[in-house]
Image 1 (cartoon, rainbow, N blue to C red):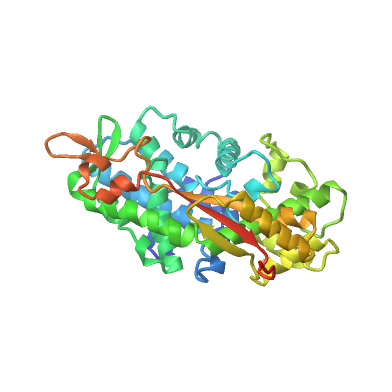
Image 2: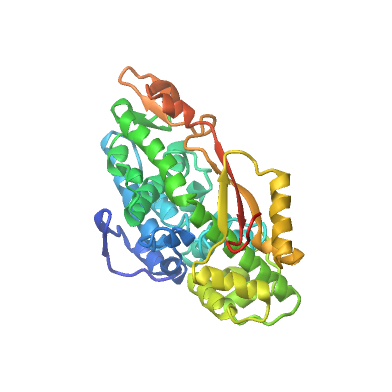
Length: 410
């Protein structure tokens, strides 16, 4: 078993002020190399190309989540909800480690050089490895993280439509991007939490805070997470890594770190063995950025051009539409590109036809319930007098087409 430190520390956070690390086990988990890696994983991927301040990390977010979880547990205990010290510790560990499996630039890796495995699955594997190292101390945290614990409300604090994860990232990302519309009152939301029949609920006087949370989430998605420039930058990064993977399969030499080399030159699927996990723990944003800078001078034209475009922020042109892009228009753009010297192979990397989806509140799964003094429990959509809350249950899809800015469309 890994020996525990004899220190309890505080961290000064720009959002919440001083955050206390509550015990030795959590302190040692934060100090572990697996968790320290999150300092080198940006929270918002390529969004700093839109909002220059968005350089905060998954480390910031995870520690902030742990802080809010401590607050939530304290609030619930003060309202008479029985939560043991073991459960409190486990739920704090579960939220602290919920993003430990994120790859470089958030989701880009999941869609390019690692096939068929999500960051949630990798997070779980990291937690299981840490559980071995810490002699079973994470067993209950893992059960809660997987949503299998007998007390449903603890699972909901980790993953639901009003979970601690969302309460932190909306407020934090709003702060670092400057998008004020996402500045939700997470502290007020937590103060309004309660538990009825083992379900997490919000007391009736918290309804306006919940409404603001839902609306704020919608606005943050359109203005920040799904901003067209950030979306096209991530799509280009995915295409760049896919091209690198394709060249690696053909035996082409690509200068890069040992960790990135491992994932480029080896087929990685959902069978993440211990060696792969340990190599993944050494992979972060710096590996990707360093490689892209090198690849600018690579002899492969596609790899070189995509690298240069990303590094110098010379991104593809984006055309957004509320309706699917017609096949006729896509064919027209393809023909224009080919007439101007772009090859058939180029088209698969520099012409992107895709869509983005935003659903602020899912009215059919993991609903948010309001709890009235009468004892009645009502779904948020029914309780709210805001008609737009009902409207926000419907997914909104936007379609986009990206192509090089130098392409002239007749």
